[in-house]
Image (cartoon, rainbow, N blue to C red; front, side, top):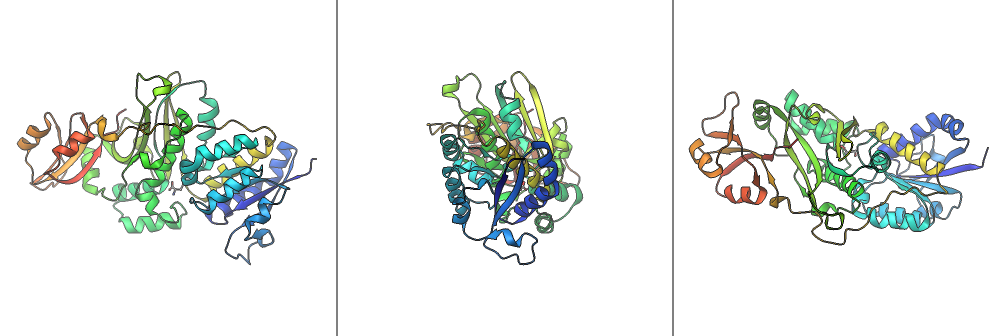
Length: 414
Ligand code: HSE
């Protein structure tokens, strides 16, 4: 057998400890199938874990790792954009392969980090950054590379899907379900990133960057979270023939050559019709629907968050990096070079669900034209809910200026 390949784990939190556990549980099987010997040499964390069976591997100083030529793969599982960015950059620059579950980092700095990885001929993998245990990055990059991707739409956040399922289907209250999602290891350290849509936004940015070849930055994407969704909205959705889901979607505008490509990207709760495969995706599960010109629709489904699903994706990346450490696999995209690569969502037309108070059907018709009125059990007299005809976000905003709106979201088009 060849000499032992040494791995360093950065961050011993939920995903970090899961990664170490999964790695040692299956270590001998990995070695048998690859003919290599692997070991984790360091675990970096600022906290002390005196009772951990891995206490002898714990270090607090990143220099020890980056300066150790024996370490060939670094798994960054700290999260965020500060220390993680610095460590990943330094590890790649030192010629080490890096794998990460950090969507915030890849969404903000992916183009730059991939460039360093290319220059150093090392791998930078991030399968665990999107969809937890669902293989999506590698399939998108390798299996669908023969095709032109038209659109991607998905449920990309396990925490909010779990919360919406428990609240809208089982009548649970938001604070309790959020606490449960935290206890189950689904939520981010700051769950605001989940409920605000920010986490799903980072993930759709990564998928869109990979699928369309140019970096999409989170700040360019219209993002709305789930905090204003109520049971009443869900009842209207059901009477319309669907459910409410937090959807992240990206599609290229038709008819433009690659050099003038523009993307429409949005993260928002949406009315999802029962006919859509996304409507039946509940609890912590995620699903990603990729539409290709030749392939048609392909759906990826699985557990989108949680210690072990995410850890399994990290370990798979570690093994891939170790197997191909002398031949960097091409996972890349470029900076777009123009500010309007992502178009303003307000300029695009959608159908919208609206729930108004103090309005009447005649005034609604006058303002919006032929709408589809919705009903729910015991609806108050002054409450009107309906689906608008296709209208741009900007026009809708203009029309809604003087209305008292209790609920508003786009309809997912199939
Ligand atoms: N907080 C994330 C989620 C974790 O709930 O989807 C997985 O990225």
